[in-house]
Length: 325
Image 1 (cartoon, helix red, strand yellow):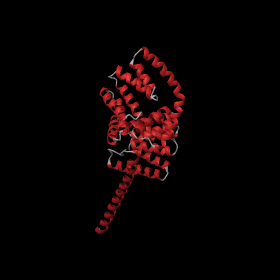
Image 2 (cartoon, one colour):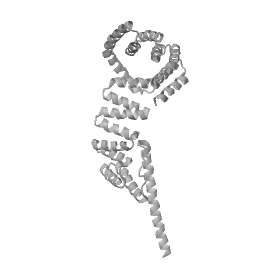
Image 3 (cartoon, one colour):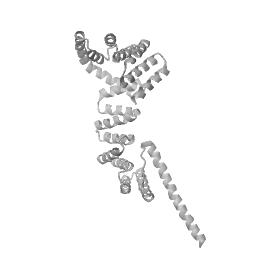
Image 4 (cartoon, one colour):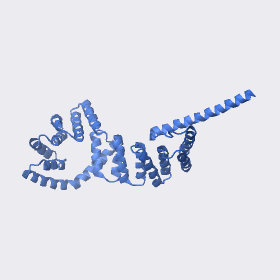
């Protein structure tokens, strides 16, 4: 009799070990997915019995989702929600399944609930961008993607795609210029950039010329730094005019770093890299704002690149990125 009881006890123990082994496998599979898609942990601060129930329902939901049974996955998530309400991981999974069912309105609502608890969770933010993009709510998608980029600058390429898709070409060109300066613009976008700049040049050139003529007339009458800055900003494609007015700006306003930055950039465009570097090194001493300091470092990196000093180029790009991050 004792032997039978022992055997039965051993079988029960094996069953328990098998059950926990299966849970371990499910945990492993879930955390593989979590590593790729999100970083949300589940079922905290529960009693052991409730935790086992929660895990059972949660991993059933994952299993059903993996084979395309999204409605059954949602049913299991509803059971999770009865065991533990307001769990971020459950909300996130609800949102994913409703999106897969093309029920985007409900998918958004659950994503927003999750973000109330974890507003800077990058994976939920990316997921919400995907929902807005599917609904062609591109302005909302861009607003959320900008938050993603603030957390991780690597995601700027998708922001660029959204700008182009929403026909926000001015912002797209500006972002492409930034990426190009950092050697981070994918080659597939270079042709798009060239096309947009040509189109923009034809429509904007005349307006800018008229504006600059009016501003230069004002500057002759009133040597104001504000007017000078406008001239330099409106003349970004006229290298000679930039050099002339930045020279005058340095003479009249020697403590204004912007005029040094403009002159350095213009000299870099003329491939006069040594002169550009010297001007930029002189001007950076007057910089107060972090954003402008980052711009100086990018321009200095361009000078070093032109001089063939790629170690210094890399160093100054890193310094710029550190300020922007």
